[in-house]
Image 1 (cartoon, one colour):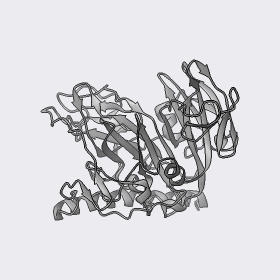
Image 2 (image 1 turned 180 degrees about the vertical axis):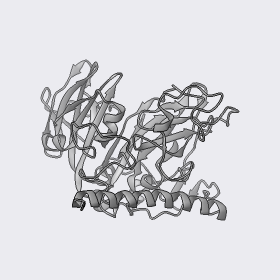
Image 3 (image 1 turned 90 degrees about the horizontal axis):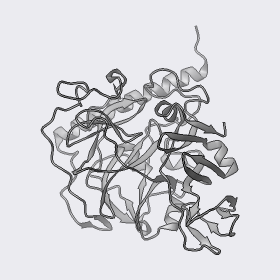
Image 4 (image 1 turned 60 degrees about the horizontal axis):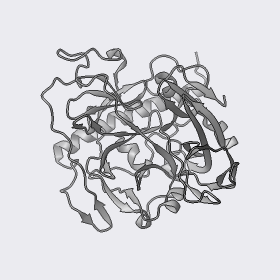
Length: 408
């Protein structure tokens, strides 16, 4: 029987993705053998690229590894069926992480396009940008920001950027790519115990640390143009990664399409909407909400309650999808998002879109995409950013099946 065109296209792109993942693994093994894959010797400054201070990770512990057998002897029972933790193609660290990140000032960056996606991460008064064109090849950056060890992650297959506090009790963990997937989402491993972690939720699902949870930290995906305008003197992860990659090219070309099938996803996605539909996922304790991005892009502002939190999510056009075109910067236009607690002091505010920003109805103050009051009575105030995930519906629903949906 002749296959319909969408099915043929889906199969073609699935084969391309499988080949890509296997190719990445092969490149990593060749690089290791030839000595070309390791980062260069540490240097504080090279031109306008700087290596910032990093907190040292804890040493490797003498405990059984879950990398080869998640249910191996001497390990706790995994939190998920080990059969659901499947190979994505590359071996452990076949997709190399960035463990000695180098940065340059935003004002000196000339290799990012205005609408190109970056992950914006702020801790205290320190803010950094992690370009999607780099993360798409490495997926994990082990970093230290404002004296805090953190991990910034991006999973292209589920289109999710998630940040974590790397401190777990007395340990300072650092993470690698395990080469495995759970619900077509990145499975990390920590190098201290070689436990397996679901990047999507920051939880150890197998290994010595099974059941442990990392603190999730807010991160948002915005355009380079908006980020640079806001932070011209702040740090941007540089292309000086110690690895040779075709930064700027999207190896997942065409994956951002609602007619596609998620790569190596077991079973059927939640039928409430197409698996590859984009959503803004917000979680608070046991409660979660998924706002359909197309809806948020049209309304610009959505107020909701997630558990005991009054939340506002808003959007701004002008962001290029990193997973559409063969060039990261040339992807179709989608919306950048921000998610915030509506409280300023003891007052809850309500918002509407106004031009490229947002205005609260209570005081008439104008706020930008990053939650900062830029003009009006509350100028100088900052809304509290909330941890959220810009992701595909199939992944959000697989991890949080009881989620509420807004804008369907």
